[in-house]
Amino acid sequence: MESIIIEGEVIHGRKIGRALGFPTANMSLEGYNDVARGVYRSEVTIDGTLYRAMSNVGIRPSVGGKELLLETHVIGFTGDLYGRYLSVHLVEKLRDEKRFSSISDLKDQLAKDYHAIVNR
Image (cartoon, rainbow, N blue to C red; front, top):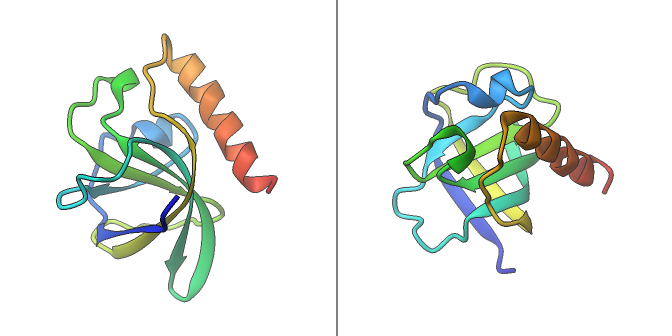
């Protein structure tokens, strides 16, 4: 996979990731039409510190999403990123985006994705 870096301002979302235990920094994908939808192992630098992250490029079909977004769960970061400008490096695609039959199934898959990243 070619290295992909997505830059932009963190915008407010519906706070669904937070409710699932994986709060995300959401960014518009306007101008990034060629990025394949799916879940990625990613990296984000915040205030000079490099963080591992889990990112989703897609429309979030399991929760009724329609708009194409980048959602990034920054592992080990606590704090407010709203309005901040971030550069998210998509390192490796883990899987395609898919619709889950239940929120419980989505949460279980997010936990598997998370563990695949932190155990690397």
